[in-house]
Image (cartoon, rainbow, N blue to C red; front, side, top):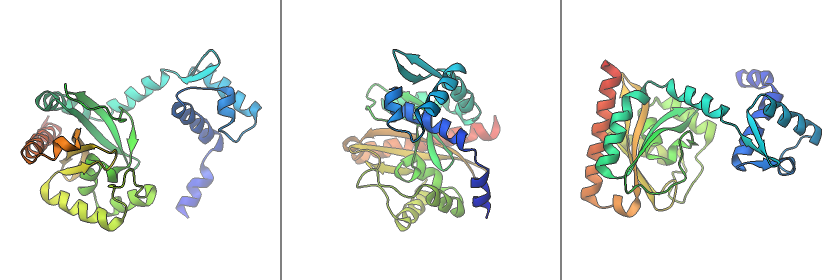
Length: 255
């Protein structure tokens, strides 16, 4: 009954506006004709949406192509800064990137997905499709699994019910039984590993950031899978990322 009530209270016009915003982002900018081919509204309605968003400066138009404006950057920075973990983690992110020469990420959970909140890049950082602000399925990320492992069981089930367990690669977890087994191992060892579960050839090691049984986020180091398979180097990364997470936890608890 509750879900039905929520759905009945949704405003379709608002939903369509944000669907249009997401479409323009996915298309990396688009003309009116391109957008018209992707949305199921009349051309006159689409025109009104685009003109309204342009008038209030959430879209920019250049040579007939609509782009998202930097109004979204302003809103995004404001949204990011509301997480106290951001300021408490900057020193550790930079230090980890310098020590490993790798890409280091800070992630949090929002609406059942892992969100890339901050990053530092070392000299040997690999190119991936990850970016600040990106929302990703939790079950296929080392950081996502680390956060889920220390979350209540009913929350884990809610995340699976909301988003499923889609396979990003053949190595991605695809069943709740696999996920439960993995999360139990992560709880016992205190860290999580992703071996090309999100992208072929890319792996990561992550540790959760937990204070008073509340999961605040996770810190992760991304590496080529071949490099992370070296046992001595792998252990070094585990030690570094777990130490960093512990230091962040202390700052969150006492500063």
